[in-house]
Image (cartoon, rainbow, N blue to C red; front, side, top):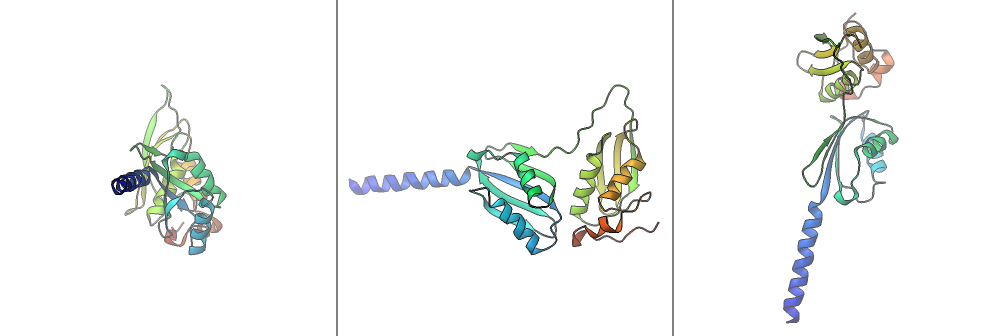
Length: 208
């Protein structure tokens, strides 16, 4: 009888353990500024402050950072973003897949249109060479007041952007992109902004 009870207890705890392992939220963040293993170590060390973090993975080339965290702690998107910034880096995009299947994405655009708004769509050349470049370019563009949508093609380096021309202009958009380190036809990034890009983002600069 004792043997049967022992088996049942072990089975119960095993089941509970498996269930507990499944109750983890999945976090994916693309981080700008990771240039070396030491950078990755610093980011991981900062996130170790979140007790219970599991399966930390960092890809220096792409800036992809992922980890798991207990669902019961309900770690918020804002807390993750702030922790990346505390480590000295810039979060580009963030995604949380909760244990119950719910997906949360970082907000990329806050432009509000009115009945008088006239949305235009234009294309412009923006220099870049990788997925991290794309994420950075889109974050900057979507963060400009007046922009409603943006897409960048890595193959031809063309940015297609839709915007309310009463709130912003193509010139203003290109100025902001250049500040982030990416050359455009109208505005070239400063040497400092270009040098601050990760090694994988060192594109061939545009001649102006």
